Every structure is written in C-alpha cells, then in structure tokens.
Image 1 (cartoon, rainbow, N blue to C red):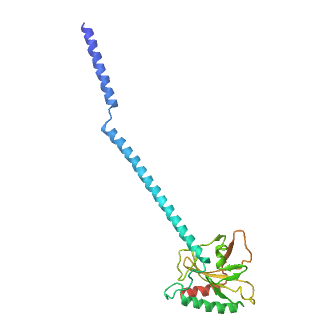
Image 2 (image 1 turned 60 degrees about the horizontal axis):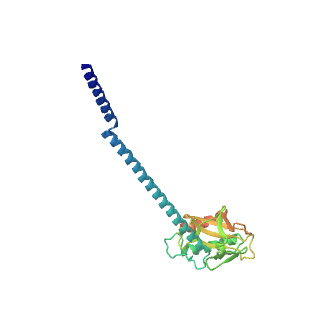
Image 3 (image 1 turned 90 degrees about the vertical axis):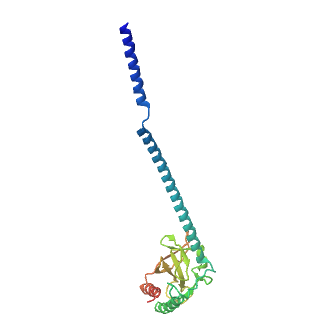
Length: 231
C-alpha cells in the first residue's frame, strides 16, 4: 500500500515537472518580444527608405524630361523667321551691338585677305547655301557637329538654355567671284566658349544633317575670340 502511494506521488511530481518545462519553452520572454518588434520596425524602415528612393528617382526623371522639352523648344527657334537675333545694346553683355559691328568690320577685312566677300544672315534673311535656305530650312536640315545634331538657339546677348548660342551667320555663297567655297560660318558660344563653326557641305544625306566643324583658320577664330572678350 505504501509502495502504491509512493508511485502515485512520484508520478505526480514527474507530470508537474514536464508541465513546467513545457511552459518555460513555449512562453515568449520579454527579450523575444522586443526582438520581434525590432525586426518588424527594421522592415518597415527599409520599406519607407525604398519608397523615398523611388520617389526621388521619379522626381529626377521628371526633371530630366522637363529639361529635354525645354532644350527641344530652344532648338526649334533657329529656323523661326520671327526669332529675335538683334544684339542687345547692353555694353556689359557677352554679345551686343558693339561687338556685332566689330565682327562685321573684321569679316570684311578678313574676307579681303581670303579673296572672299562675306554677308551676314539671320532670321527672315536667308542665304541659299548649296540648295539649303539658311536659316529657314534648318528645321529640316538640322545643324550637326560630329555625327549628331546639336542643341542650338539664337541669342541676342550670348545667353541661352541650349548648348550652342547662335549669335550670327556669315557666308560667301552669293559671291560669284569667290576663291573656293561656298563657305557657311556660324559664330557661336558653346557653353560660353566662343567658336566659329564652318560647313562646306555640298550634298544632302539620309539623316538630313548639315555637318559643321570648328574652323582651322586661327586668324578667324582668334579674331572672333578677341571680339567676344572685348580685346
């Protein structure tokens, strides 16, 4: 009888011990709860960061698109007969009427040394250059440097949103007694730097581009640079 009660007591103790172990294993501790919350918060933080990065990327894309549209608009005025290309009277401007007059005098004297007579052209005043009316046809026959069309726009003071600020155009295409040619010159500021672009292209092409390159004549490019710098 005593042995039976002893067995029952021992069995009961074993059951209680097993129950205690089970509770210790399955009941989450404060540390476990905190760890779970921290992981959830970290995941939420990453999601917020990813969303912010996506919004920033979207804003950058929208900004780039707006700039491209503005640049496209700037390019389109080169062939506009009503575009304003009259140099400003502001003596402090990079390009102004005084410098335009100086360039006119320079082109007259320089042309004489080259046995070429140059005239100035601009919006509403075209020169027929090998079958292309410049500048009116430049929407269809776009100016290019290298292999790509350039972003170019008329400027009255040397400033523009385009890469190239077109200040004026000179050509000897109407000089029947010229030596060689004809030649077509664009006097531009490329991102603020004075350049003289020349083309002697005589034929069209599948890309409908009028190819220019910077002049190799240092007397011409140097003279233009001095005028722009006010020397």
